[in-house]
Length: 92
Length: 114
Image (cartoon, rainbow over the protein chains, first blue to last red):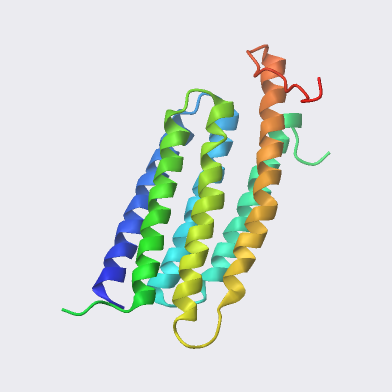
């Protein structure tokens, strides 16, 4: 791996961490519950992107399963939380 | 000093672009004033940034000479099915909660035929 790609991957991960920090600000400060759910969903997506970048960094295909699981669990978790906000219970 | 091979330059540029897009999405999530405005910002991360990173890893894993690495598309397919469902369910929940709390709602949509 060339130094250019290595530097670019490091910079990208730094940008992702900055974005996750901003998402964490919204998660902790968010005035309403739906703001916090939105921030959690955003953190899931950025974490999934981070897994894909790490797959390039370590040249391994094993990270794709993790990224796929993060997409699925993020979807299920966000829909369950939104359903809870809508009805007060998840399964009725 | 020699230039690195072309696929690595492409992958590096795509990754930096995705980092910028994700940072813009996070800034929108923090700075926009209202919840229904804030809902727009994370869509940037789950569509544009995810596509860019997918193309980057497609280029990177296909440039190793083992044929096309198309399994990354699976993530894009799953994400493009789940992201709209998440957005709609969350928007309905937010509308319901605001209506019940008696807060100000966004104006209703008008059909274009009227």
